[in-house]
Structure formats: structure tokens, C-alpha cells
Image (cartoon, rainbow, N blue to C red):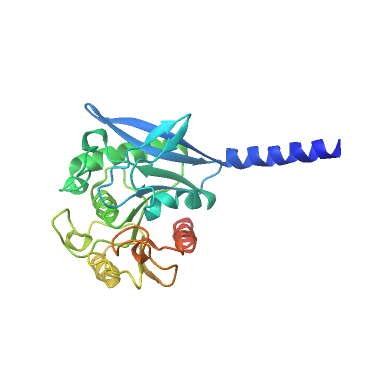
Amino acid sequence: MKIVKQVLAIFLLAFISLSASSAELVSLKTRPGVEQKFILIKHKAPQASVILFAGGKGALNLTSMLGKPTVGWGKKNFLVRSRKVFAKNGLQVAVVDAPSDRQFERGLRDGFRNSPEHVADIDHVIMYLREQANVPVWLVGTSRGTESATHIAINSKQKPDGLVLTSSMSVPNGTGTAVTEMDLKPVKMPVLIVAHSDDKCELTPPQGAAEIAEKLMQAEKVEVKLFSGGKRPTSKPCKAMSKHGFIGIEKQVVNYISDFIKSN
């Protein structure tokens, strides 16, 4: 009888844990003929919501199998692979895909991240998250995802509450707009800029964090945080499993981001 009670207790604890945060695939109609998908990880009592923007082409090809969201591309992306850590830190999490009209090889490249359509799609996500929980909504981008997060912070009609940029695009190239090229004066929300001191990606050098901070003249609060250490890279410098993607210190970085969000 004692063993049965212990087994029941274990199952009860597992159920409570699952109830505290559960993942599902959400699809919203955002523009005529267009759907915006995202993985939603709910939390029983979230302190804030975060919208996570992956880098690269940003087309994650999200699907659902037996009710469980699956990622088709970008599984190793820093924010994508760390999504459960954000949830464990008391945050409601949305991992956004490219919209249905951008599900091809180039994805969000070639200017879409810097477009009104992108803003319109994510504004629907912001509204949805606020319907689920009356808490602040923060935009969190990594690498090319910082272009999305910053552009939306500047242009969103839904007025997100904060911005976090990690491994930020600070050197221009032909696939989009660097954060340093944007007019950041309209950004008045608190901003955290995170970089790895050994990021060798030529488009996201660590010194770019300070360059972006200098342009955020109207922001309520700006903090630059440099991390170091981690594991030996197993990918090229601009890919996810390198210092660019905070390999080996993911939890440390996400914990810092989460604390900043919850305290601001």
C-alpha cells in the first residue's frame, strides 16, 4: 500500500509540473490568406510573456504531432533550444515561425523582417498573449532575429513592454537591415543587449552591443551584458552551436535575461 501511495505521489507531482507549463501549436489568421504559427508554452502564473525570434531565415516549419509542437528547422537555435528554460523561469513563451506566405528557402530574409507585414503578424501574437495573461510582453531576438525584434519594437501598434537583443546584428550585409542602421529613437521601453565576448561571427561582433546601446537615447533603461566561457564550438562562428549561440552557458544567459525582464 505504501508503494502504491508513493507511485501516486510521483504521478501527481508530474501532473502538477505539466500543468504549470504546457506547449501547444497556435495558428492565427493575421492577414488575408496568411497564418502566423507559434509554439505557445503556457505557465500557470506567468510574470511576463516573451516572443522569441530565431535568427537565419526564421522559417521554423512548425507542425504538430499528437498534440506536441515540432520544429522542422532551427532546432539548435539559441532561443529555440532554450524555450523551456524561459518557461521554467515563470514566463509565458511564444516561439514564432515565419508566416505562411514566407515558408520557403529564403524565409524572412530579403527585407521581410523589416516590413509592415511582419509587424502586423506579430501584433496579432502580442494581442493573443495578452488575452492569455495580463502581463507585460517582451520581444527577444537572437542574431538576425534582432532585426525582427527591433523593427517591431519601433513600429508595433500593440506597444510591447520591453526588448532583449542577443548576438545582435550590428554589421550590415545583403540579407536584411542591421540594428545599427535603424532609427532607434522611438524605442522608449527598457532594453537588454546581450553578447558573448568571444563571438566570432563577423556580423555580430561583441562591440556591436555598445554601439546599439549608444543609439538607444530615449529608452527607459539600457543595459549591456557580456558573457564569456561555455563549451567548445561545434559549428561555424555564425551558427547556433558556437559562442554566437552561447554554447554551454544557455541556462546562465536565459536566467539573466529572465531576471532582467521580471525586474523591469
